[in-house]
Amino acid sequence: MSNTVNTVSNTGGNKVDDAVSNAAGNETVIANPWQALRQFTAARIALGRTGVSQPTLPQLEFQLAHARARDAVHLALDADALATALAAGLPSPAPACVVLDSAADSRYVYLQRPDLGRKLAPASRAALLAMRPAEGARHDLAFVIADGLSALAIEQHALPFLRILMRRLASENWSLAPLAIVRQGRVAVGDEVGELLGAQAVLVLIGERPGLSSPDSMGLYLTWAPRAGLTDESRNCISNVRPAGLRYEAAAYKLHYLLTEARRRRLSGVELKDETPDGRETPATAAPTFLL
Image (tube, rainbow, N blue to C red):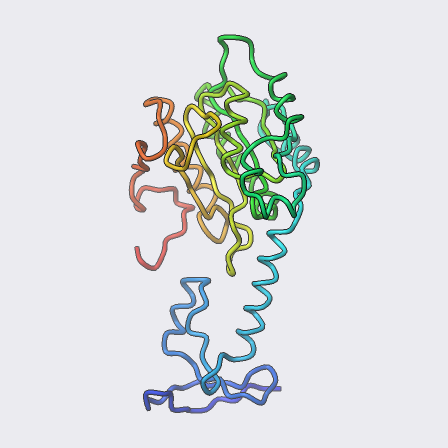
């Protein structure tokens, strides 16, 4: 069935071209004059209208996005499969990988008790104590991968991002602790992991709270001198890491700067600012926005 093309008056009395019938063929959708801006954003703007209501197709798309966001929150992380993929896919010599659990013993508990996701289960804590380096020895950096609120983000982005980041670190003599995968983990669990592994800094890769246009967004949290009990002002955050958001290359570029400065100045959080050059000097692979 072909779309119809009409000229329809909008609420302001102006003529708007290209009003099209919806998929059912029984509604006339009045185009929004801002529609051209949709090429720059995944946000739900300029959807048009049918009378005073949202058209059927955007409403169905909204419901699908909401379902995907809910699924991302409840999806369980296949930690063993991720550990196998990391061992095979990271540049050699890749750090050893250990799978841990937070004190939240199920997804149901994890979603209701954020505090339990911020600390390790006793068995996992004991396992890390056994891996702690000898007295006086320290690792420069520990990687912690946590499912957070989107295991989907971790499954899709953790490995390709770490490949790019490790290539940047390869020539700089970073001593890496065993890589920890934490099931049912929140950001703060990384501080406990880093402390137990004797790391000077910890980087947490975690699935962020899904949005209606981004069920697969990954966040990066860097903390210098990690220890249990730290709060958000001690961390630097890079968010929305994914091909449709902040691309891997651009995120690795920013994070490499923060890691270098954290080690040089021995600090992180509100005292450490992202002073990477502006958009004209970021990697060519970084996507420009319509504001630049």
